[in-house]
Length: 620
Image (cartoon, rainbow, N blue to C red; front, side, top):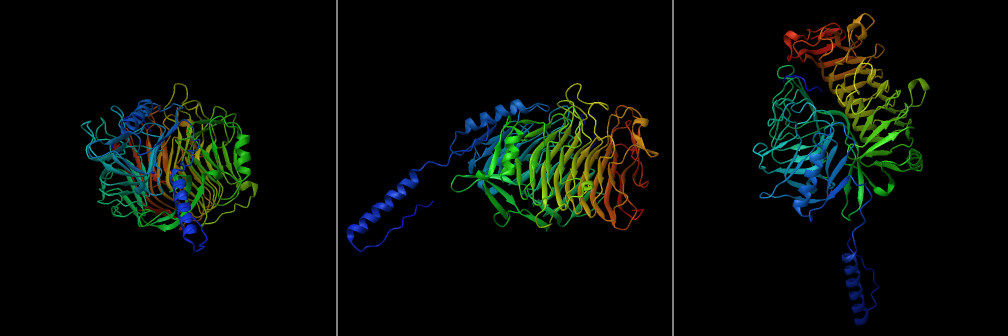
C-alpha cells in the first residue's frame, strides 16, 4: 500500500489395598499424604525451546518487567518494516494489568501477541493491545503483526488519545483472531494525521462494545460477534457468519453481508494445558457457520502434543526438517528468517505447519520454499514467503500441478487450509517469482492471504524490471474457498481462477503502480490486465465483495480496460464489485467487469464505481 494520498488470538492418585488394620490404614493415609506432597512439589514441565525471540510472560512476573520488555521490542520494531527481526509475545493464562495500573502492549512490525489459554477467556489484559500508524502516513502500511486468543478490557492510558478504546488500526497481514474485547474497538487511527487506513481482517472474535471502521477503505469480518454493531463504510466492507453485522446494503452504504460463512477452518494455535504442557490445537472445519467457535465452550477440534512437532529454528537444515516431516512430525517454525534453497516438502495427510512471530521463508536460487503433496487435511498457518533474487516458479505450491495428472485427494470434511499466509515479491531485497501461491488441491480454504508485489522498500529492491512477478494467486483446484483474499501490484493478472465451483468472500486489490508505459502493460488488444480473472472454461464460480483500485504513479496516463474478467455463463455470479481511482491524476479503470460498469477516473477519484450483480453477461 502506498503512502500517497488516499481517500477515505493432577490430581495425585493413591491406589491402596484395604487390609482392615489400623496400622495399615494409617500407613495408607501417610502414603496418600506423601504422594500428594510429592505431586505438589513436582516442578512444572520444562518450557520448550522456542528460541530467543519467543517471549513468554506469566502473571507472577512483575508488571513493570513485562511492560519494559514489550516496550523495548516495540521501540525496535515500530519502524522496522523491512527488517529481519521477528518476535512472538506469549501470555500464559491469568490476568495482566489492572484498572489502576494498565498494561499497554504496543505492537510493531513482525510481532505476534497471543494468549496461551485454550480459550480467549484464559488470558485477560487490563489495558490494551495497540496497533496503529504514524503521523505522515496514517495506517496505510501497518503490516505484518497480529493479536489472538485473549481478552482485552480496555483501561485508558496516559497518552491523551487512546482513551477507552481498543485500537487495532492496521492494513494487510495484520489479523485479529479469537479476541474478546470487552469495550469499544476502533480500526481507524484517529490519533494520526492523516488518519487513513486500508485493509483489515478479523475472525472468530467478539467485539462486545461494537466497532468503528472509520477511514478503513476495505475490511473483512468473519464469524465474529460485533456486539453493539459496526459503524461506517467506505468502499468495500464485507461480513460473513457474523452476529450483529450491518444488513446487506451495497453500494450505499458499501456493506456486503452473508448470513453464514460457506466454508472455514480456524487457525491452529499454541496453548498451555492444565498440567503446564505446551500443545497445539487444530480447530475442525466448518460449513455454513455463524459466530465464534468458542462462544458456547471449547472450540471443536483436536489437541496435539508439542512432542509431535519438529520445532525449527533459523539455521536448521532443510534436510533435517524434511526428515522430521517424513517421520510423521508436524512443524512449528519459530520466529526468524529462513533461507530456503530446496523445498520444505509436506507429504503426509493432516500435517500441521505453524509459524510464530511472522516466521519468514526466503527463496534462494530459484527454489520453491514449500510444497504440499496430493494429500488431504494439511494446515499451513502464520508464515510469510519471500521471493529471492533468482526467479522462483512459485513460492508455495499446494498439490501437484494439474498438468502432472495427480489424484488431488481432498475432502470437504477435512480440507487443506491456509491461514494468515503472506507472500512478498521485493521490499527488503530484490525478489522475483512467476507466481506467489499455486493451489492445485481441491477443497482448499484460503483464509487471510496477502500476496504483495512490493510498491516500496529498500532502495534498489522495487521497480518494473526489478521485483518481477506475473500473478499473485493461481487456483487450479476445484471447490476452493477464499475468505479474505488480498492481492496487489502483480504485473499481469493478479488472480487467475481455473478451478470449478470456486468461491471468494472479500477480495482487495491494487493494480501495479509502476508500469513504464501502456505498451508494457497490455495484452490481446486490452489495456492492462484484470485484477481477478476467472478462466473462460469455468462454468461455476461465485464471489462477494470485490474491490480493485488504480494508482499508476510512473505513467499517470495508463488505462486498464477492466478489473474483473469472467465467462458469460449463468453459473458464474459476481456480487458487489467496486473500482476506485486513488488519485486525480494517476490511471483509469475503464470498466468494472467485462466491458460493463462506469469508469474510475481522476475526475471521480476516491469514489467507488460499482456493479451490484453480474452474471451471464448482464450487469446490474
